[in-house]
Image: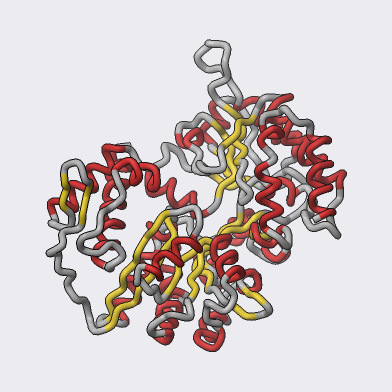
Amino acid sequence: MKRENEFRYMKLANMLREQILSGYIRPGQYLLSENELTRHYGLSRSSVRKALDQLLDEGLIEKRVGQGTIVPHQLSIPKGGTDTLRILAFTPSYFADYALPTIQKQFQAKFPHVEVKILNLPGPSFRDLFETSRELGFQPDLLFVPDKHGYELIQELTGSFLPLEPLVSDALAAVYPKLLRSFSIQNTVLAAPLTFSPVYLTYNPRMFERFGADQPHAAWTKDEFITAAKRLTRDTDGDGINDTSGFSIPTALSRWPAVALRNGVHFRAEQLQTDTLLNTLNFLHDILFRYRVATLASRSALNSEAFHLERTGMVLTTTLEMTYWERTGLPFEPKIAPMPFGTGTSTMLIANALVIPDTCQDPALAAQFIRVALDAETQSAFCRNSSFLSVLPSVNEALRSHEDLQALGVTGEGMDSSYFTHELVDDLELLYEIEREMDMFWCGLESAASFAQKICSKITNH
């Protein structure tokens, strides 16, 4: 925990330092207040103060009693190399924390005269961040975005981003075709995926052994899953309240639909079948309220602390989240389990990508960064000692066993039949509307039948 706290305040110090040195926060401008920094970055007050103290020691900020924290008027921003590549990155992002520095290092080894500036900014809307940065005079050459934010951005700001095939067609040729299709609008590739992950089921083998639950196997069934979850759900301290749980269900749109997809649910009106949707919703209510072998993980906290603390035995996760767990330390080695929620092979996908805005000062240089990022050597470098997946099939096949790739569902039909959030329906606002109305269902205060009817009505009438 001490290591994680140190990482958090250092990360904030690094982000604020880059915002100052890049000119995003200029001499004479005030930083956000401590309360605002705490809220925006999800940190404790002590971590925020330690980060500010570090910048104070470096002379990058001044604290003015009763006024706040300001960048000194007299601060001189040193000039870098002859060329500068500016990258605006959405945060928080496990990939930005652990892999983007590797890409930057590989790029600067080939282009030592180029200074790469990565500006990490938090916020609920990446579009707002992007437009605000341009208004403040920070013109990024590349945007680093999660798939949902990236797709929304290029869809809403049509014409604001450069087609990538004329610039890096050779590098894109080796990428999974599914990923390129998912980041294309009107058959034009506008984003270069750097990594991706399916949503998959992972489990704690130590908890399974401790409570005498049978280990997952290739053909295990939904009934076996429920039996295992029952064994893992225990009152270990005798206070009458279960303090371990079999399964943690994330309520975010990027996670729980994986259960529905496995059960054969399609969310588009022409494919939607009420019975399969009702089966999924009944199953979720079964494990939450009838059997009481599952707990909820909130939309805003996908990273399950309960899994870290060995309080839940199974969770839906991604390779990006798994890398974070590996770097911050787990007391056990998690294993991949097949998802026994149905006979389908589909799941949810997530990804991180780079796009080039049309205001890019040097598109050729930005393209070189993408080309380096998609090079097999670079992809291998950040995948080799982590759980990250490469966007190149050849790299994954070299670094992972065929069994692992099959379990993750990134071979053959499983990959092609899976979905990013923006692919579930034609209009993402419809999904957000459904998500906003799920609270009563998640609390058990609305029946599966009632909510299934509500979803079907919204989708068919949209």
